[in-house]
Length: 325
Image 1 (cartoon, one colour):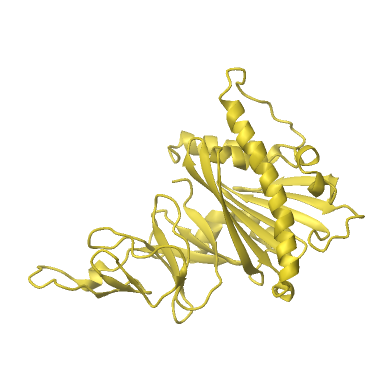
Image 2 (cartoon, rainbow, N blue to C red):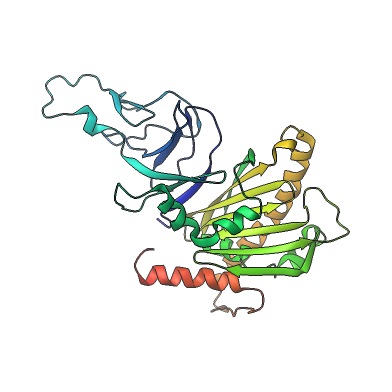
């Protein structure tokens, strides 16, 4: 497991439950009072998952033996238990996980903690001191989720993150359409505890509503990216599958005034996907090159690849501490 915190969009009505991600199974839901909760997605009887995918429900029903849990995690129904000894329904609910919200995201923490610790501790552990900077860039709860795409990419998760963190170094060479929209000499990078923030102004001649005046690219260690530009925000969650494969979940968010403009949404996402596909080609090519006997290690370009170096230092620290296996 790479992270103690993961992020999700916090939209949806009562009974909305969201992703199950990675080897650690968990479910996030919003109950009828609007309270967000998270649980390990494991039935207390024989460990089957009680939910999958996303949707609306009033309870979680295990498909194996029908044990039923409320959105508060309490065990509501378990049939054919006559004769069972020393059993307490109260002690056999879904195992809870600490949650917090920040902007449009729900955070969950899988780290061991004291029950008395506040949800603000989850946010602090995720963003550190980066919260105010990201809020001032327009990353807030007004953004509305409009689309999701998933890609399975034939590269190590770290290769994908490295591509994101090279300070725009590859943009003029690999993304001609994007490069034409950006004022690349204005590109800058700032480093915080576990967050790096890259930003770039728009080219004056672009005039594109989708791009806006400035783009902000935030990387939250170890595998989450938040991109804010024009009326848009998109996020990328990178999930390792194997040493040479990863899954990337893209979510697009939009300012409320444009959420009903289907033509604008479709054309903007199509333009965004052009860049994603160009990056996929790059990352898969790099993964192939890493296996060549002609390659050992590369050197950092110090004026642009500060965020990548920051990322590698954090990985090194976690590897040394035994936090990543």
